[in-house]
Length: 310
Image 1 (spheres, rainbow, N blue to C red):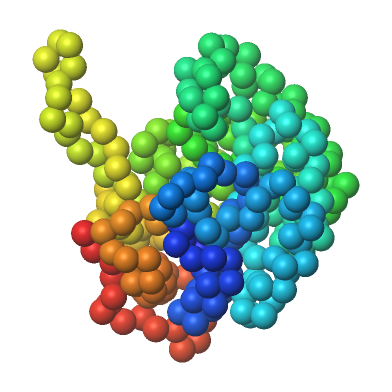
Image 2 (image 1 turned 90 degrees about the vertical axis):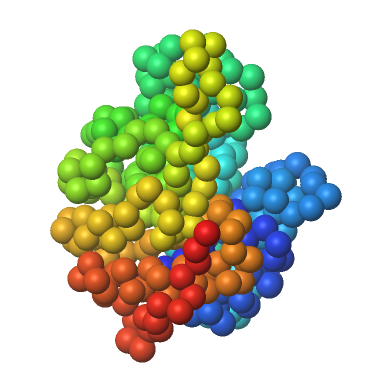
């Protein structure tokens, strides 16, 4: 098993700093965030993130991405793209960039739900059947273009989209070539929407299980109540060892289905400063992988001293 970090979760570091620090900590790879983002006076996960490569002018950035990654001795677990499947021009560009870098796979976003504001847009108001059918049509085109470039386009299980669950993603991709389309199974996102017991969900995905994202979340009761007087619960991100999802049980399920490939961490908790958070996460994940019967590099640090906690 190999471990990487998605740079959406390292907003305070420039790409050079991220690559240097992650390599020094012992990470195997990096998953670069690629998107145009809003400016922010302070670095944030979604705006002002210093470790993000802009979509505008991406092609001109490819030599620098390749240089920074290679000089740090890191591999690509893939690219963290934000191009939506209905934006064919941008999808074509990220597929071509993935091929040029040798990054193998890239996330291509599905359509959001009709009542969702994901991506900053206004809700479309369209029904789920309409959106699902449109996403399937676009993904048939995406699959063909991914095959042309010799790479794989990844559907992420994500709340607020037409593929919040493994079941919906399998239905979306059924019949498409799993060599060129696949699924990112994401423990943290599924705690918010789309939860299915990990083992049967992973078994259901079968050949479409292509990548793993790990983060954790928890539900907390809000101070206000709804109009009926009932409690209101909201979700928040949590350190890996402190959320409601069991990373150990998750890794045991991965072992049972024979998954022993990339696991990418995107820890959006802020309880621990960034450097300590990433270093501690790597130690924790390596130890959990061993407990689950998965492989880790020989000589990896499996000590318990730096698990990020709340």
